[in-house]
Image 1: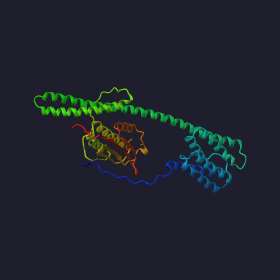
Image 2: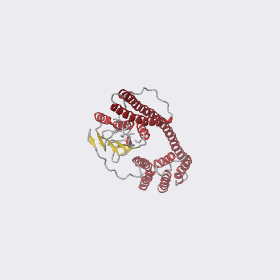
Image 3: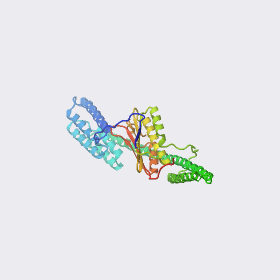
Image 4: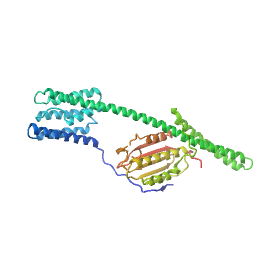
Length: 396
């Protein structure tokens, strides 16, 4: 049986074309370097020669094209750029020195390669333009070219150091988020186990009270007690898995109310619509009871994905699809908004958001898989699959 409960209209994804071998930023950098070099060359030629050699303009534009490949092959890019600089110095009477294209190429080598490679690149970037001069370079030209090269190398080294510190700090925050999420999961699973134990206590009392007067009622109570005991044992094992890292318990009072599950999806979808994000809910497959911990995991995934979509997707629509499979449960939340890729949560990258860390922890706990990422044509998708055993039904 498949049911669809639509809170708002659905949407489709647009097909995407072939990805270019360079990024938009690489193209902008190449164009910017070419424009800066052309302006500098034009002004210098007017002052020194009274005209602008067209051959020099063509060489400057062509020399900026290798910057499109600077991230994939930084050393080769610098070598090609310096070759064009050498040809420019030999063909056109220009003052030797660093141009913007050579600065970008050298900076990229410093950022992406080792210190030894950067030192050789600096030496080459300083000497090649001077070697192409028609006359012996003056001391001022040598010092100017060398100072410019050293400045570029220092800037790249500083940025590398800052990036390493930022990455270490990000990893620290991510580890802390994982630890906090594990404690939260442990509390929620504890609530579920406590709920089953309470049920077992009530059923045991009812069976004892009706054992002599109504054996059939006592039998039903014992059957419920047995099922609740199995479920509590399963949840307790999962609780121990969560605590395997030995995290210290958080001093927070556990909530007394039962945790939410798939039955609450309509509520949070309706809340999402009221908050300004039109959302559709679709339930496919043969619906059946789920273990409370699985229902809670699904609820948290949908809740976090829709929350992030409202934060980052902008003017968009969202879709929630829950599919009951013979041996598992699949949940997918997608939107057609701007996405993480343009700003960085669910609806919207890459996976460094701490909400995504929490989702992954929950899914891994159940032995499932989680996929997050942009959608072809725009938008963002969070997709998870949780395996279920044949007898993994929840008590009604």
